[in-house]
Length: 529
Ligand SMILES: C[S@@+](CC[C@H](N)C(=O)[O-])C[C@H]1O[C@@H](n2cnc3c(N)ncnc32)[C@H](O)[C@@H]1O
Image (cartoon, rainbow, N blue to C red; front, top):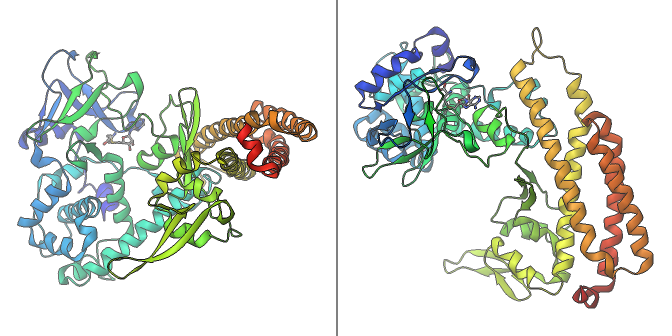
């Protein structure tokens, strides 16, 4: 329905009619207009200065009345006067009571109301019935074809998009089964012959929300019409900020110290620390200026041979993996889950089944008799342990292996991806092709740096306590691995593959030697470090 509406025109309004919509709905636009920026039409509409503006001038660039900010609260308000929509929201149960479920179903309903082929009018119009006509169709990766998604093989976006599509499908199926019980929905939305709503519509409302949601203090995630017309730039290039005033109105303000000339673009930041993967996932682009993937999340499966795997999975209240990030010149990682994987029964980890006050059975983790109330607290317990150096080495070693396997997946898919026909006359569009290539290069760069960083961590602190024989074997392997790695880094992704594999193998042997050596002589040696 939505794509059809955009193509046929009944769900489209020219962006130069946003100003009358804004005036009619009491949105004030001061010294700015919304439209495409010449030379950057591929970025859609944006906020442009129509006069010189200075941060010292007190007036906000935009004031959006609180009633127009689309939050959970606003959707619930609307439901009070729209009994058809209220029935939808109630049918959705818990999902209809959280911001995402409420906002997405509201957007779907507003698109449905705008559809001219609706027989027997349902729902109540709102300012959004018109506003959604200004919104473009975003080519987020959830709209990439299967062949286009294959271009992401080896990147962290590959599994993220596939998992998102599965979860969107589950949400859509829930929506369908819950609202099929409402007679007008069964007829107008889901009828097998002329029902209007399809899975693509759910993808469209998800994309509208995902690419435009802003987080306002005191409101949470919401959509603020007109402010969501601002494009993104990061760092010093960000020209404006958004906030709420004491009355709950949403404001767009020029950043302190910024002056703009007529026709300059006024951008906001969608999150300076967001990585390339997240930018592409949520907004469908990667900033031209981005030189690093910034951060990426790698999943860590629980090893099949871990006897405590099931118990660990049951208590893990955190994402099953870790984040590698590069902020400035610093490479680091975080992930509480990793510590669960590094220790076992022989180290002091134990699980017990306890009864809760409601009589339910609950599995509890213990570290050396001390209850582990949340995985987040585990690292500090381990840090206080005499074996910390060993646990830390195990963790870094695990992370390095995971980074190596991700690099292998990236390099390993390189030939096939590069050989994929793309562009005109093929099933691969230019935009997904270029964006996937960009992501591949950025993620390879960050993974390489993380690999080298972990290599430094696993090698440096322990060497001086190894016996001479082990130290020299470890030393040779380390130098060899560093050499192979340096070759890998200086060559193109494609040529680097054999070097990366050699480096990976050498580091594996080296780390094994180090770990065995450390664990071999146990606590006294570690205590000396
Ligand atoms: C919140 S909307 C901004 C308004 C949008 N351009 C429009 O026409 O409605 C976010 C979308 O704008 C586009 N966008 C924003 N900043 C961009 C940038 N720096 N480069 C490319 N596209 C950008 C992306 O398509 C993104 O999903």
